[in-house]
Length: 398
Image (cartoon, rainbow, N blue to C red; front, side, top):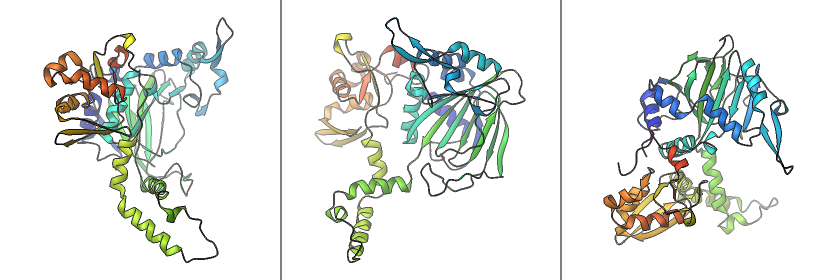
């Protein structure tokens, strides 16, 4: 799947693929203003907040470096029948933003089709799970205090300016669940300065950073942060622990009074690690991830006229002479080999209008599309979902 924003990120950072993720701090720039406004605007972010029932920690507000209590800007919306739903009070939120505050919305990809598609494309690119958070800062407002993230981030400045400081890590490859709390910031500054619309930063896991608009005067800053959580050696060991339950040796009680079984356990562990190495784990991680959220296909709502693959990662296509296997989302589908042209089109990650696809890949396209939709590997391309691709991802039959 070729996505316009990911191509822009690669060009700005001088990357060819995602191999440089997590290696070192990188700063670049893209000058395509139309692309920036297409990705997200401040008004669109506020519109999302207005129309949905959000609550902490998914939606937060900071002033002067401290979090504002949700009671200040949340109220219960009561229906005529007395049903109460917590909603953002837009009047109070507006007052806080006029005074100067930082609004944070986590996982914007859950609410916005453009962000959903960007994250899916980035997952296909990085082969890791991705979520995106949005940060709107107004006037002289501070953001988070100096901190580090337990994942790599790619930051795209969409509007306005903001001052950043990035420091070296004080612990190599720190983790969320770790043997060290890693609470002491490093004194070594890697980079500091103002970012402007189009600036893109890559901050690896563990590097301390902070951003603010203090002393910047009137104005705003809007940026999105793509959080990319890579697999680690500890992730692989956890996966091995699940596989160990298949073997009787690991299911037996540990005998604290005898040590005769120790060598057997150590040997069995080494054998398991050799049989199911890190490469096997990474492949399984991609193919066993369950399907994401999407609108189901209901024939009572109309015919299936366009689809798109919604798997978290690129499905694996395995050819076996007369048949072809599709491995993705914890499933393996076997179809006749004549379906291969249709499968390559439908699993491209790009929108597929079925009428045009028939001329490209044959009459089997519609039938194969119905199977993939039924198995939740593809989803109907509703107008709402289609809007997330418009101008950013071309049609598979273009």
